Length: 157
Image (tube, rainbow, N blue to C red; front, side, top):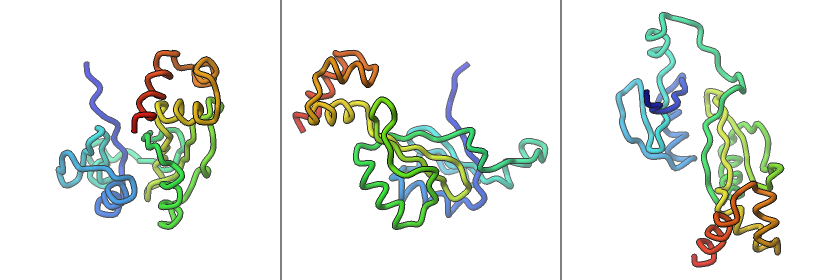
């Protein structure tokens, strides 16, 4: 068995497609009309169509028990763009206990989205703050080799 992708239901396909493409920079991989799969392998499915596929079972929205997770190094810039577009936030920009910057918000159908900086960028940012490789590895729970490579990667940009 092979896992393929998460799928969330949406009430308005065009509105949701616009949200994911314009605000989150996602690109459509397949467009089947009632179902769109994005590169990154997640899908949105028109709720009215999906409901028929599951024998008209009730579909709950906004349960806060599932999220789509993305990574993006300039989370601060994204937060500004989201606020300009009046997106509803679960919480504003914050640091997780391992110091990764994240923001959580809802898509137009109250599906929770999390965007966090990559762990590579986090390692680089912490090094720029003056932390030693050993300290960064301990804080992030990442192997020291990963931290070294991440710092090197961003230092060369």
